[in-house]
Amino acid sequence: MVLLFFLCKNFTCCVTMSINFPAKYFLLFSNSPKEGIHRNSINAGLRIGLTLLMEEYEVHVLLTEEAIWLATNPEDMRQKTLDQFSQKNKSSSKTGKEIIQYEDDVSFTPHELIEGIISFGGHVMACRSSLALTGLKEEDIMDGVELIHLHNAIKLMVQCDKAFVF
Image 1 (cartoon, rainbow, N blue to C red):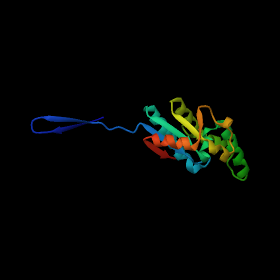
Image 2: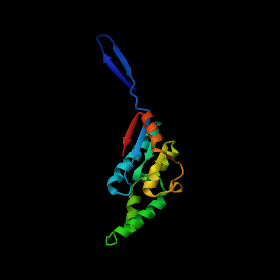
Image 3: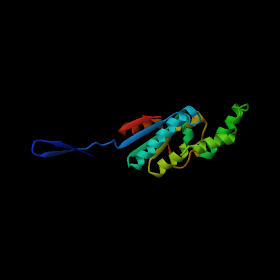
Image 4: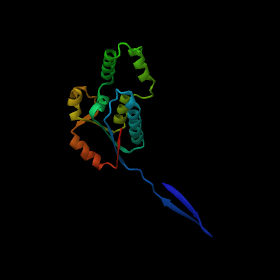
């Protein structure tokens, strides 16, 4: 709420203006969390979602395409990432331990942010069609993440006041 004061000749006039933020937010993630180029925008989007929840706004998060990896068990994802790294970059000087160290340097990992969003009452959803795309199974998805059809997610997105894509 914003208070504005106007000074007139003999009196002060007080006008109250109410500025409201939208109540419902929809955050859409589709980029791969494995690629460094997208890591910062994914973390920023998840931090925004968690902050909005802490301020008591309603937040819906949809993970589609490669972003569905964010909804898997973090240890499974870390191992798969290390396996892929060792296969692709055997000649590289970086070791798996250095990769894990880099992830530990970040104040919150994407998985911790998603768990925070769930614990604060946010709705985290993963698109069912992305399971087939990535080869994941329903049991690979972490607890608290709802599997949803894209059509139903779009209906929910239309009901929200603001939508952001990361």
